[in-house]
Image 1 (cartoon, each protein chain N blue to C red):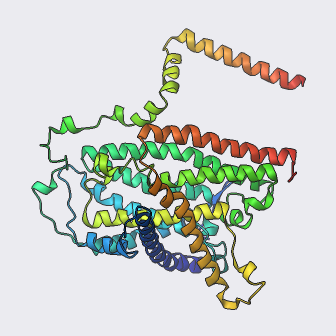
Image 2 (cartoon, rainbow over the protein chains, first blue to last red; image 1 turned 60 degrees about the vertical axis):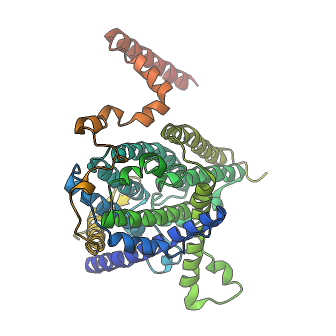
Length: 344
Length: 115
């Protein structure tokens, strides 16, 4: 039993890592293509992120003379590794028929663990920025830290709200498979539905902050602080950060799906056509479509239509506006339970 | 059983499995990194990027720790200003707060008991 688990962890981690790296770059390419079209540009081909990684791997990896060498070199490794680990715990559509809990290690860690793991890539970037010995990188690292402190609060409120709603059902309410198995939309009345929509809105606003995209990319602000905490990074180290960005973005979108859109399409299609062995494939493709839609609405369209906020605006948006929105959603969920308004 | 699941009232996780997975993916990340170009020139390009301006002294370039949370404290300036006023350093003020809050708690408890 233990031996099987160890073997599954080792080989499964390799498989999920390849999967995460591939789709992370694919979605990066799609994102760039759509933004380019929205700005009336042709844009790069979807395979461009793959070419970027190959190019970066062939570039020189400069170690700045002011850098703290070991920390500067370790940061990209930790960033990429922790981004990949996230995918081992987050259930994905279709994989619930392959793994017991929808994810390789779904039964060995809950959503609190995922919340902590989400922090590690950002912390690694902060450590790398401070270790760079550059004023631009230091300012970027400082901004990343402040941004991280800002979006964690509303993110925690959203997750606590969903878990609280599930607590009436019993079981390990922090388990991601339980959350995915009991979609919030199925157990709410009218007030709860409005509350859940508000929580979804809060999470959609948190997502670009979590993956450092416009308008919350103050830590990397290219035109302002020359790529901020990545200012001194080059070559293979920069390639690792680039890969980690793709993987973390994919993981974050997967988390949004688990929390709000965990439905599979196979039960609907089964009514019209027998899917047989293709059930896993159909559900998995549907999951990829959902990831695309989440990224389209929370990252791509937002970054194409908005300008970068100032760091003080990022803090006030997350700590005041989005937190209040999320708390209001939580209160509506509680009222939904307490008053039992139903649908009329 | 070597692998122990840690459970609390709310959550659960398995630290050894996490460490094992972390080692595997760290090795993968290391292999990817090792596939990249290693050599690089030293000298001019190893100096920190400063928009082409001559590099000032290290002390002048250093961002002070007091500025670390600047964006945060600046955005929540109103809150921090009022909090600083409260933290006057006067023992009388702190005892006053303690007595006031304790009285408030007793009033709340009393009202809850009566109702």
